Every structure is written in structure tokens, then in C-alpha cells.
Amino acid sequence: MTEAPRFETPITPPARVTGWAGDRATPGGGSELPVFYPATGQQISVLVEDDAASVDVAVSVARRAFDTGPWPGLSTAERIAVLERCGQVIRDNADELARLECAATGLLLRELKERHMARAAYNFRFFADFISQRAGDRYDQTPGYLTTVVREPVGVAALIAPWNAPVALATMKIAAALAFGNTCVLKPSEQTPLALARLVALLQEVLPEGVLTLVNGRGPVTGAALVAHPGVDLVSFTGGTETGRAIMSAAGQRLVPCTMELGGKSANVIFASADAERALDGALLGIFSNNGQQCLAGSRILVERSIYDDFVGRFVDRTQRIRVGDPTLAETELGPLASRPHMTRVLSYVDTAHADGGTLLTGGARRNDLGDGYFVTPTAVSVPSNAARTAQDEIFGPFATFLPFDTAEEAVAIANDTQFGLVSYVWSDHLPTVMTMTERLRSGVVWVNTPMMRELRAPFGGYKNSGVGREGGAACEAFYTEEKTVTLPKIPPPLRRLGDTGG
Image (cartoon, rainbow, N blue to C red):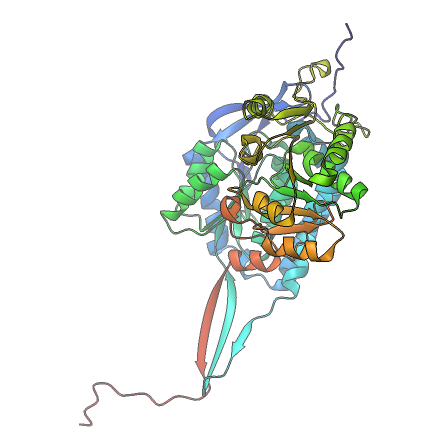
């Protein structure tokens, strides 16, 4: 019997991870939670959970920094300079941050270095550029009056980041909140705190004290205390739909505005008129990149019936050749899932597919030959209808579900038959088909003849249960600022003199 490989942890993480408020660690006060390396299943660190009292410390520091500190009142040029230094901090420490991220998530180290950290640094550069072009509004149509509209920071932002791409997604929130003059409290996922804890420590050397604080812990403990805190003025959350509902319900009690980037079950629609090779490459990337753990995955692959058998056969052949293994190696294409419970849940959908009359096309098993890590074989199933649970539930793993269609009208009906509406993919070189699909698909983003591509100036978010609000340049400005209307008379206007009897 061949001995399973022994994967080395990509970096030695800190023994204990704590939150930070101002210039000191948060008090903690909650449970101590284990942090695991998904490639080995071994515990590598301990997270000190912040209870309600500890959250109060972090929020109070951020509140004081907003109410009495310099940050909200800095000039645009001063704030741009700080944002650019933040981006440079990420570039200077990209290797360390990528290794910490790999250690907690199991994401491919190569992808973390080349894409995630580059995107994180660019988030700060983007918002520095964006605020350099901001303009106010002026209205003088009303005779004798001048009205201006300015935007001011809202206050303290609670930023709740997901576990599937912590640094890349959290920095979009941090950079946007800071760019418009807010202070913020960041809560990472309790599963993946390592890189964000280090990043916050690095950024605190650049930012004024209290502008960015950090709390750690589980959603029902730390997250609930953060959202309910009276010192929090707005909430930005990326994560699961059910958690998003709970957060919006709690925030709604205080009329706190929220943005929610939630789940997805995105349709990847492939027509016979598509470039077959590009569509195949795009379908594989759409479901298996990021270890299959992304809300915008093209997890429902709809293929026109005339090419269905050939396309699925080629997809299966390529899937079976995907290199699964050590996330630190350059040749690895699919790393481990993020946790043991998540691995168990993903694999349970093989039985679900069978129960719904589906067929397992490939994969569907744990890779026991790779040791105790959370490795699975990339998986694909075919199902008899879109009502199957693998076509409706967000599995959030390397698990594709295939469905055939005959016409564009049928493809639209299948694609829109879901509780979600985050993104859609369309593959066709026939312009009328492309136009029909982009006009009728009910999703916040439609990608045509390309896998995932993010334009940060454009809004990103979903229809239906995929979210509320948008992220992106102007969308972030609308969320992280308050509009103030100021009206001035050009000359003193005549006024009625109430109560003046002339005596």
C-alpha cells in the first residue's frame, strides 16, 4: 500500500490569533476555536473569539476615530496617498499573506500570489483613482437659489468577510469604506482568520489609530454582537443567503443600511453556435477554479442538445485529468475543500443526485490517497430536470450539474428557474442569440464568451436571493456615503413677517 503524501504547511502561522482595536489586542472573552490546514486536516492555530464586550471595545475605538479623529476630514489628496500606501503594503507582503491564506483555506498558493493578492492591492489603487474623479452636483434652476449636493462618510462600517477568498473580497470592502472617509470593523470568517489578521496589523501601521479594527469569531457570537451594536452605522456582508437574512433582520431593527452579496446557482449556457474549445475551457474554469468554492461558479451547465453528448464527454475527460493535490505546488489545479464538514456536505450531493434520478458522470468521492486532508475528486452529474436539488441548491464545491436544452427560450426558462440570480454565462458566436440571452436572463451580471471577469467600475451583485445592493465604484460611493443637500439664496429673498402687525 502506497503511503499518503505528507504535505508541509506553507507557513508557520501564529499560535494564537486575536482581534485588534487601536494599538492593542481585543479582550477576546469567548471560546478558543481551532484553525485547520485543509490539506492535512491538522490544527495549526487557535482563534480567540471576541464576545459582545470585546466587540464593544473594537466598535468604540472605531467610533471614536470617526467622531473625533482626523480620517473623515482628510482632503481627497491626503486620503489617496494613504490608500496608495495600503496597496503598497499588500504588494510588499504578498508572499507572506498568500501563504497565510493558503494555510487556512487550502486555495492554490500560485493563484493566491498571482491573482488574489494582486487584486487586493488593486482594490486600494482603484478606489484611490475613483475618489480623485469625484464630482458634486449643482442646481440653479430655481430663480434666486443655488442648491448643491455633497457626499459625506456615513460612520462606522461593519465589514463581514467570507471564507472562500478572504483577502481579495475583504479588501474590496475595506478600501471602499476607507476611501469615502468611514472607519470600519472587520470580521473575517472564524475558519480563515490568518491572512486578514496579519493584513490588519500591517495596515494599522499606515492608517490613523482606530480607523480599521478587527474582531474574530463565529456569526452567532461575534457577528451578531457586531451587527446589533449601536455604534455601527452600516453593514456589508458577503456569504450565505440564510446568514444574510439573519443579518438584515437584525440590522433592520435599527434601520441600518446593508449590502448583501449572497449565494448563487449560476447557469452556464452553451449553444451549438459557440466556439466549442473556448466554451469547454470556460465551463471547466467556471466550476473548478477556486477549488469550486465561489458564489459565482457556473455550477449549472446547460448545453444545447445537438452538442450535448459530445460536450459532456469532453468535459468529463478533461475533468478526470485535473491534478488534485498539494495547494503549494505549481502543477496542482485543484486543492482541498475548506473544512471537513464542508467536504462531507459536498459529497452528500452524490446521493442526492441519485435520489432525484440523476447520473454520476465522474468524481464524487474523497481522495483518501492524499491523506487526511479535505480532498475530493472533481465531480459532475447529469439530472433529468432543473427541479433536481443539485440544480437548485448552492453546493459550493467542485460539483457540476448538466442539463440539456433545445431552444434559447427553453434555456432562458431553465436558467431563470432558481431562487438565485447572481451571474450567468452565455457561450455563442451568434449575435441575435447573445442579445436574446443578455436581455432575458435574470441575474446581476452576464458574462458572454468569457469566464469570470470583474470590472470594478461596474456594479456587482445579484437578483432575488443572491443579494441586496451592489459593490463597485459608483455603487460603493452610494452605500458608503450620505447625500447632503445644501440650498443657498443668491440674494436675500423676501420673507413673510409672521406676527408683525405693523404696530
